[in-house]
Amino acid sequence: MQTGKTLLTRERFALTIERLCHQLLEDWGDFSNACIIAIQPRGIALADRITKRLQELIGDKPIDYGKLDITFYRDDFRLSDGPLTPHPNDINFIVANKKVLLIDDVLYTGRTISAALAALQHYGRPGAVELLVLVDRRFNRHLPIQPDYFGIAVDALDEAYVKVRWEETHGEDEILLFDKKP
Image (cartoon, rainbow, N blue to C red):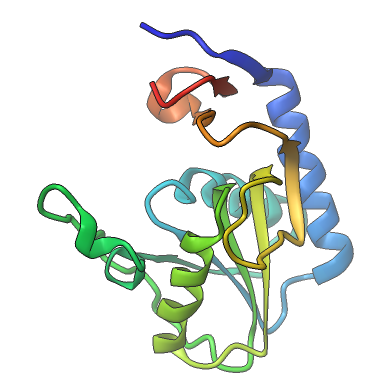
């Protein structure tokens, strides 16, 4: 098994999520006329944590939270080696004129975010969209997309791979950097 370089451990991981939540509260207030949309599948764990913590900090005012599948909006979906398995969308509200916080785990080329913006249009035209990612791989961007909020920035070569591990699914919160995809 290939081992990676640890970029964030459990303690710093938790601190990073807490910092992101406080930044959001400073900029978004109580999330009135706003919503959080997780990009499936890898943005869900982060969005779940962010939404849960924001809800604890805000109190009893609910935050609209949805999950968006982008499988058939990607520009490379026809290049898949096998059958694609989309995830069900879970958005039970209209995003028209709302401020939308789009959440994913890692921003790399920008193609996932581009696909998410296209898919989001089926739920109405947002008033504004901002992007939160846990890891911003600053180099190798194919599209002019930048995060509004990010946990850490990673400068890595093209072959490198960033893996976010979650306690709920992997048994530990950590971010690893591999020389190449494991």
